Each structure stands twice: as structure tokens, then as C-alpha cells.
Amino acid sequence: MSFKKILRLLSLLLPHPIFAILSIHATVQAFTIAQKKFPESASNNGIGNAFRHALWCCFIMMYCCKVSSPEKALDFCKRMTDMHEELFPNKPLETKMDLHNNTIGMDYFMELLPGIHRQFFEKSFFIDGLIQKMQNAKILKNLDDNFKGYLVYLEEK
Image (cartoon, rainbow, N blue to C red; front, side, top):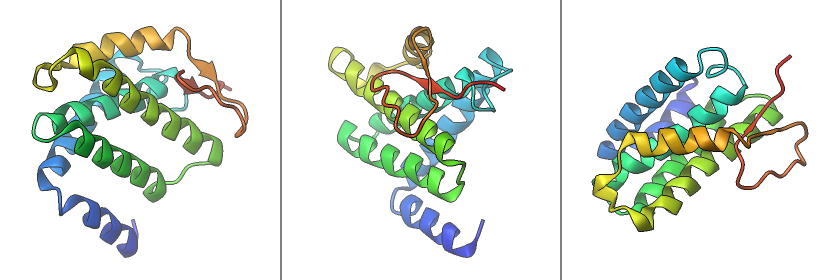
């Protein structure tokens, strides 16, 4: 990573050290769970990757909401996950897929928020719900595709 990219990352994390630590924890947990549940596709562009990105955002939101407001957690999560895609660029279709699935995770958290006090969220709420959403996931083929509300993944070759 270039020095300029490191500075950009630090400009996001240093003002929010607790969010930064919680996000790292969320990242490790989401990756570990996705690898266990979907070992064939969690690290490529398959359905497990879609699950991992959405779960990652749910976990960031869950942990950050325990110490701050949902609005601040959502803002940080969006900035953090968008920056991740900028700092570690992929091909355009892969980036679209990742950003889309990140949004699905943030939206899913916000959808559940009115029914559950934010202090009582548990990881299983998101794991089970996102596995349900995987049943209707769509294959992203073009940059023009718009599958609002659905997890997306790339066709396996």
C-alpha cells in the first residue's frame, strides 16, 4: 500500500479509534465465519463472497452501534467499506459486486434495527438472515445490472 493510501486510511481511523478496533474485530469474525460456511466461494467472487461482504457490514454496524448511534455507525461503515474498495481495487464488476453487497448488509442491519434494541443484536441474527437472502441471490453480469435488495455474485468460471 502506498504512503498516500496509508494516510487516507489513517484519516478515517484515527478520529474514530474505537470504531477502528471494532471494525477490525468485525472483519476477522466475518471472514472466519464465511470461510467456515462457504470455503469454496468466500474468498473468490462467488456466493460466499457476497455473504461475507454483507455480513462484514452487519458486524461493523452491530459493534459500532453498541458504543454510538446507528447514524454514526452507518456513516463510518459506509466510509470504511467504500475506502476498502478504493484502497484495494478490483476489476469494475468485482467492485460493483462488493459495494452492492456492502449496501445489502448495511440496509439489512437498518431494516432489523426498529425491532431490536441495538444493544441486543447478536451475530446469529445476521448469519441466518443473510443465508436466507442467499437463496435469491442474483448473478451480476454487467455494470448496468441493478438487483436492488438482492445479494449479487459473479458467475463461476
